[in-house]
Amino acid sequence: MPPLIATAILAAGVIGLFVLDRDETPRATKALWIPLIWLVIVGSRPVSAWLRLGQPMDSTDFYMGEGSPLDRDVFMALLAAGTVVLIARMRAVGTILRTNVPVVLFFAYCLLSVLWSDFPDIAIKRWTKAIGDLVMALVVVTDPDPVAALKRFFSRAGFLLLPASILFIRYFGQLGRGYDPDGLPMNTGVTSNKNTLGVITFVVSLGALWQIVTLLDAGSQPNRGRRLLAQGTLLVFGVALLAMAHSATSAACFAMGAVLILVTNFPIIKRRPGAVHGLVVAIVLAAGFSMLSGDVASVTQAVGRQTNLTGRTDIWAAVLRVAPDPVVGTGFESFWLGPRVESVWRQLSQFMHVNEAHNGYIEVYLNLGWVGVCLIVLILVSGYRRAVAAFRCDPAIGSLMLAYVVAAAMYSITEAGFRLLNPIWIFLLLATTLVPEVPVPENPPSLGIAHNDDIEWALQGEGASSARPPWGL
Image 1 (cartoon, rainbow, N blue to C red):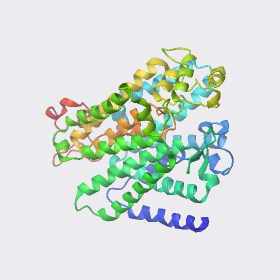
Image 2: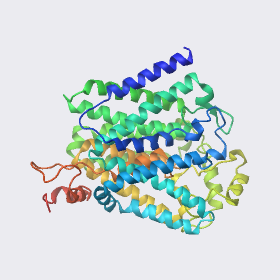
Image 3: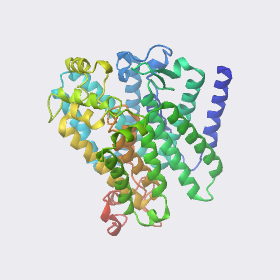
Image 4: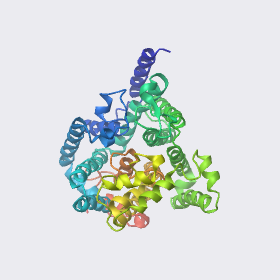
């Protein structure tokens, strides 16, 4: 099929997906387009790269878009717009931040670490972009209907990015395919490398699967049939792209998240929320036992990796040898700058120009030390507790939050998942800050976002079900 005809068919299909998935009640605010544009850029290529399609993407000018004033201006405009929205929603923002102390402490510590960075000017610029990830997550979760906003957030991003990636790979190879550092061909789609393609695909696909499960469980919901068709099509695109991307980590995390979403929607689990802990422990122990039993080779080969995790263990050893301060690190996003990078590259001649540790926990350790690692662990623990609390109030949304928290924790074992402008980091922030729906009595005192006391009750965790405060206190 000629590329132009394929493009026309794709464009018509994407419009059709938007029409099929349209749901008039409830409606998300127009402010949702701000984080959506942010996610589309983060999940594909910088704006400057789109304007220079066909040029090499491995230049350091493209590293997080920092080499282009245009990319800087686009991010700053989106950040400013998102901040204006949050100022108008200050009460809801304050409630969410008060119940997310680990997230607030982490970003505050990142800002503080700029003080001991060797490159404070670069570190503060990167922190500004990093706070943009949190701003975009807050714009979504402070929407009058945050669950509806979340659905539109990943659905619209998926409709735009996933079909276009298949088009690029199949019909525009100079844009959608490339070569890895070993000279082997790889599919990149609308992104610049297979790992970015894998992560944006798996987070969107988890959302599509979750929507399918909730729609099937909803019974006679308006527009249910056409929305199922739209989300089913998106899921098919996602599974196909995961196969094309050959990103083993993303594929494994999608499988893990999918199991959590499907199993937690079983009636027996819904009736006994405590069983969620056992399910998560079983998944973690299954992976850990495989590694500790000495069967590393078969496990890694089963997911398409060498026994040294495609060179990752070499990278981990090299970067840990030059880590300067184990307590506080080098400063926010400052490790991969200056002489330290040259030292790592000299040790890893086969991985020249590597610019991440390929492990989220080690990456945080290098930049923020053990203090940063402890804060990340607190975020994961807090996110997990909030997901379980949400599951008790609303098993559907709780299962999605749980899937994203667990997937982010596991993804970061072999990829730098806790970094700015990373889709899995954004979705972890979404899952951690999302306020679960709390059952309300008849004639509640107010509309819109839930009452502060009810939100805090819902997030208390295990003992919340027996001590819910009355409305209006």
